[in-house]
Length: 188
Image 1 (cartoon, helix red, strand yellow):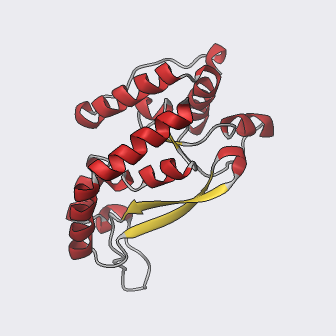
Image 2 (spheres, rainbow, N blue to C red; image 1 turned 135 degrees about the vertical axis):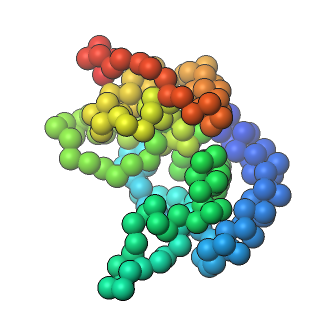
């Protein structure tokens, strides 16, 4: 059921938002130049690697030594708004349609050194998502807190939980106020 939900929603949004994709494509090209997309590889379900494309938000400005400037100095005007409203992530709907990602799941992240390989495998037993339970709780979480929230999602996933996360994620785009949830050992 979840996969069908992902296919219907992502294909509908890819078509419905195609004019927005074109506008963003042109704006990024005029503001930053070519290439318009940045690509990164992440481990997905069962730690299988896949490539995510996003709209570029930063230029490639360098200092006199040829080193890239800090990210906050390279963020373009268009990039600022794309990041603020998460529009740089729109191309990820294509990954959802391909089955590499889901609308909801643990956000893709690099495999990190954590105490238990079994815990890491549990996190990667589901498709990574465009949004997830841990994203609703703010950006200042530690890796361990994010992992605990991701594992909570894996244990309790359902279509209704996914819909709740999607609705809360849309609200978070405009309100910018993360949920206040205390993480306990019981939730892990």
